[in-house]
Image 1 (cartoon, rainbow, N blue to C red):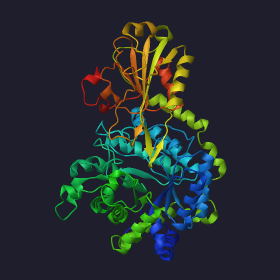
Image 2 (image 1 turned 180 degrees about the horizontal axis):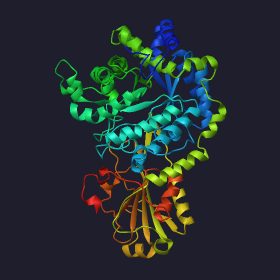
Image 3 (image 1 turned 90 degrees about the vertical axis):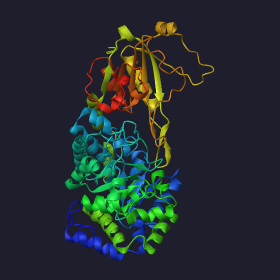
Image 4 (image 1 turned 30 degrees about the vertical axis):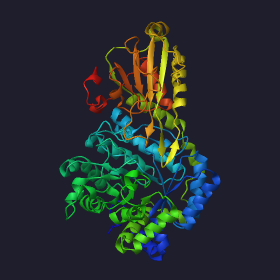
Length: 575
């Protein structure tokens, strides 16, 4: 059972009494509702209002996530949620790279990969602080970040940009700084995705992940990261739909066949025995999103809903059909899958977390929401300037073996721009747009201000597109910039460059100086072995594009660093 007097709660007797009295006075239906974190995702205001009513009054859920909207809309939504909820709600955000993960118009600062490229604990701190400040301004009290996975497999794209790097000591340094920023803004801290992503190329949104490290290897890497941050007092951990066969077998008193390997979210051995007992984690465990195939393909939903709580997870992230999922959880309790002790332990952690942040007292005082004036920090100039300074540190010149840089209007005035996008992304089951068009316009405008003439290669129909000859290419242009803003999240297990037509494909690299620039994924060299100038800019927001241009023309030096993953285990990527 949880000890609410110890880390990460440190509750006083009066707060413990509130937790205990609240549990004693709850109906069984209310107890079951507290185990869920729902998603507000209506297509219109009427649907959103109905969800708010259902989640707070009908089902009395313990927590909420939401789709990003403008600041005013989210503030009003969260204010209404808290006002209608009998118990104070945990309201969570994914502010992994800054405030843009929490609120529309929020400030993107730096991804995990960008932080590692800058090798800056101060930048990690600013990402955590600004992301949490902007999230807090709209009423969030829980940040599902940072990602503490280790990117040991360069083919892994689901956390390749979001995680820091493959070095446990670096991840600990950056995570501590990030969490410090979160704590200073008063939000509940979280790390993810236990027991650890990044060792393989598969994505749990599409299939169960598998971390195949031995017990010893895991303890020396992921285990080291988690143990350190647990000892530091991190409050919550998100469990991924990732199996850890070595430890599941070690902690089971019977043979475990391959067919019996489970994702951590359904494994008592991984959550209860390894995380909570061996690593001594006294905080709250929340599952990763329950619509992911890594979970849904592991058991029927009627079994996996209560199964996650029985395994040791304390909160279940997202509902499929609310009536069904609540019924599955209730049946699991009544059938003994979830014991009385496990239910009370989970509820104690949930309410203990709320008490640790004094949410029950704030509810009584009417101060769960910040003053509306706090919205002024969202996307403010101070935060944008920090984003601009961050880009100065993380943009990385991986190689320039042809000595093409710096660009100048005298040598490279006529530029052909080849802009390659990805397939977009899906977040919490919803297709999301990207900012690629905005990014492209900022890039073209910025280059033109510096005296360049930029012509974008637009070719969508191979039957009507006209390909220049090599001679015509040389006569018309002085340089080519191939800019890769490949965002493709939850669409493929491993993302690669997809050229729209053969015209964009880099047939021209020996005819004209060509530079390749990635604004997102750092591992594109696997598809660009012909490149001789390659830059990882990491981010595609306006401030980063401004800084990138200054570095391209030599007015600002490249300061970022790369690790070995950038070479994709090939000799020809280094040429």
